[in-house]
Image (tube, rainbow, N blue to C red; front, side, top):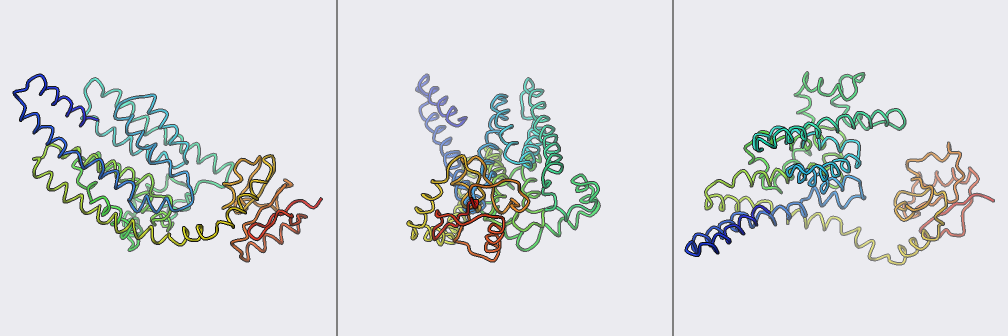
Length: 399
């Protein structure tokens, strides 16, 4: 928007003073040359980055809401628009208990960049930054306390490598890091993690590392914590849901790097920028195509079995909305508007007092565990329904 306004102001100056024709045209040309390619470049990085693309191949996960909401937090934060900031802030916290981690480091980013803010806005900016830091920490503490009290607990076990003091819980992590930082570095820089770390930055042309201001590097910390500090293998691998938020913050760093280098000589900067742009585009194309091809099996499997999927959808559509249902995980999206719905993987039917109207199993994935579950269901007094077909096994109470 600032770029467009700059070009408009230059053209207005030309209309008011036609003698400056050459200067106006040159200014607009330089403005377009300077900024024109960056917007589509960053969009391309976001759309085709393997960390984002591969995450999108995985099951639908709540983390997929992180990119738009974090970008809204940045937008309204930079504009100091409180209503939009509060809405995007609250919605981000609602995604997941650890979503506040991103907000904390965004708050630190804002707090340490207040020297670029007008004096009249500094107090407002500081208050906003402190809120972004403090409230997510309070929210995280309350939610994890509730999970530990009324649920199965927060997944701190994924960071057991950083907890030398079990009695301190999450607060023992900074103590552990302070006492033995080399162990953290050893667990972070394994061959697999180094490979994925390089791919993350190669596809961004290493542009985030061109930032000159220390405060901008707060945005890289969530990547190190969420993706590379845990020994839980999936958090550092492409193909899962853990890169949505961290990659978005890196893309913000790309924009910040472009913004920082606007004052450089236009010719030198253009050459450097175009050269840097080639690197991520090449890697994005190569990795994007390879990732797409690696998932072609699933696409072909779906396209070659229209009858199976149509039959499954029609059968599930006949389950009444007021029903109490337990179903295999892949079937639950089609049953989401039922009154009571549980995923068999996360629900113990043997200790339940509920008499379910339907227990629906996915017959595509036969396994010893599935056969054992069928035997358990039968032993509890359920019988197979006439609704069963070659793809779904449906049990109902024995009336």
